[in-house]
Every structure is written in C-alpha cells, then in structure tokens.
Length: 94
Image (cartoon, rainbow, N blue to C red; front, side, top):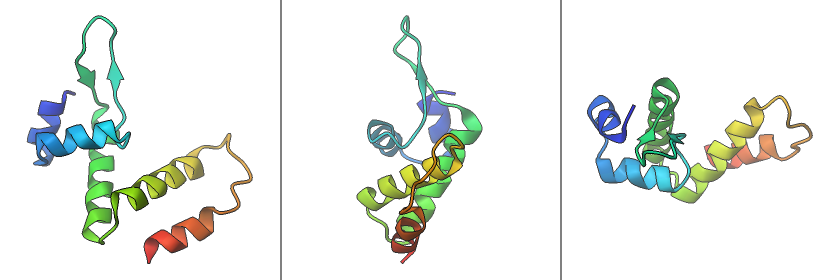
C-alpha cells in the first residue's frame, strides 16, 4: 500500500507518516524502477498504532526508537543474549 492509502486508512497526517518512514519506524519496500514506497498493510498499521500508543503515554521519539528496536530484537529468534531487554522495557514503560 502507498503512503496515501495509509493516510486514508489510519487518519494520520502525510507529514507524520513521512517522518516516521524517514526515522525508520515504518517498514517499506521500494522498487528500483519506481520511487514509490510500498508499505506492508498489516505490519505498518500495527506499527502506527503502537507509535500512537507510545506517544499517548508521553514517550519521546528517541524512547520510541529504542523501544521499537528492542521489540524487534525480542521477536527475532536469531538474536540471543540481549541481557538488557527487560531493563530497557522497564525503563521505557515508566
């Protein structure tokens, strides 16, 4: 789906989604022949909802970045030995 379709589906502003994309918060694919970014629908909508939830709890962009990365690592079965994950979650949930 395109960023315009995400705007209509989520009600988020175009500039906000563009910013989230530039910050690396939203997953996308971009074909070499076209510059249009395509976002995976379910994953991206869930990510936008998660970011909104965290912003609503007063988290900064920096904190959101750290938390999203920690969540990505926690879901990746190939990553082992991340000792500070529980501590990071605890700090970011405050």
